[in-house]
Length: 114
Length: 112
Image 1: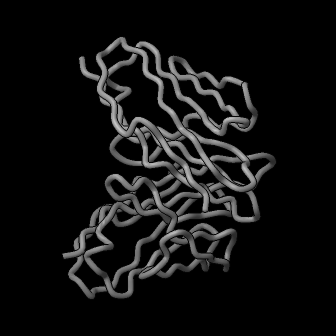
Image 2: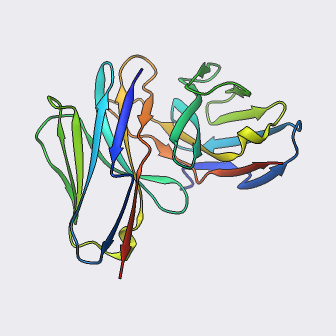
């Protein structure tokens, strides 16, 4: 029962490089989210998706792009990495069942931009 | 803009102490308030509260919501070193996207 799986777990990039973070969930959830967590800042929403083929901006979307081509996968892309994007990135998913449902999180990707 | 404020930001206690963590919020179209515990990796879900005055309880942890005064508390009794973690409060606001707004968290350290 994997839940939400993020790859990679760690990555070091040089300024200007690009990369894609992958989030996969096996719970058939409609909603998926990408957050970043920085010391003293809590979790901040980057982008989210309410279903396959849809994406929307969150609180801090600049410098990131996302895609949701398949329901189970949500990709976060950095086109030109900057040191300010050094952070821990968390993916989450959520069911749309009756009533409120909690978000379930992956273990995170620790990204360092040099 | 939705806002969630947690206090204190950090807390150090001894095993056996009781702690109270606070969360206040200002959001539009409140749906629910959630508490998460974060140790090394993923935040793990503790409680969801939607109604005022009804306590949610799980072992030594309990939480209650006051929708009139816009706050929630998380109580941990007889703390253990394994309770050391960041405790995150988040609020689900309404609409079609069901976003969570998180507070900055409370870092709890329980010393033996």
